Image (cartoon, rainbow, N blue to C red):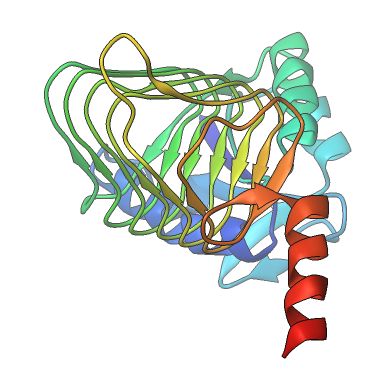
Length: 229
């Protein structure tokens, strides 16, 4: 028997469990074969009607073919869990909601999670373990690295490069680049909620605001503005 695990019983994991059941039901998989895996839960605890178990118990199972999708927002933890799953012979699988739209020329690596109403348009390359939360979109000619996370409602316009482990906050907008000179979001960068990104973002930098600026600069400008009001 195959056993399908949603790693993480937090908010995102519980949201994606519905998508997992829906996707697997279409493949003839019983809901009884779908579980949560989370070290914070007790074995056989029911979460929204689904059985759960700690990761140590899931890793120790030998009598079933195990599959895992990693609904963990922290990309560094997601990467460690992916490596651990591979070491234990667990197959990494992907989730794609029925209402997600994938157009022509889109390549997606293993372990992706595409939540309801995600839109991926044309000629896009996406690495492994990509998370795109509800109502996010990626437009034409974008390249997205490994372990990138989109919170709900992210708007990534055309000709954008997003490097590994970047986090894009809810409602953020990334302005379109141009052919041959894409807008670049560096490795490990964080785009704050609602930020409007009109320039490249350096690796590891957090930007906020409209237009988006590095957090220290944005905080300084906010302080100056408050002193002159």
